[in-house]
Image (cartoon, rainbow, N blue to C red):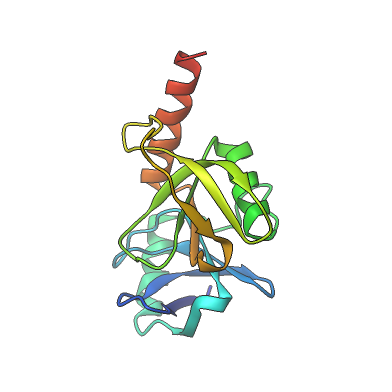
Length: 169
């Protein structure tokens, strides 16, 4: 088990996680948002990772994971894709997606509205699981730094969104 820190360009805080896999464009980790908390998966865009190194207290974190009997493994049915392919997969699998771009404190939840090779727009999902009708922003694909899924908060937004969607059908 390899526990690493990742410095994302323009972000103050490090991303920490259990390294699971990587390809030419992305690094897949099981997120460690603080100390011994394990929560969800994160795909880190290699084009925005400026540095990566083993965590100083990785042996202690690993011991806690073992003592808690947490099984760390790749997500079921996950395959590396390009950014749009990953967002589409998340939408098909969970009903919506989550990502971050330049601002490390700003998370975006949504479903694809339109896209081309360089950018996309989406219907934004608010924290109560409803669509934000006033949201109108176009995102550049190259600006996506992190795509996240299966965290506790992501699951909550996904459940609320899917519930609201079924209720309105």
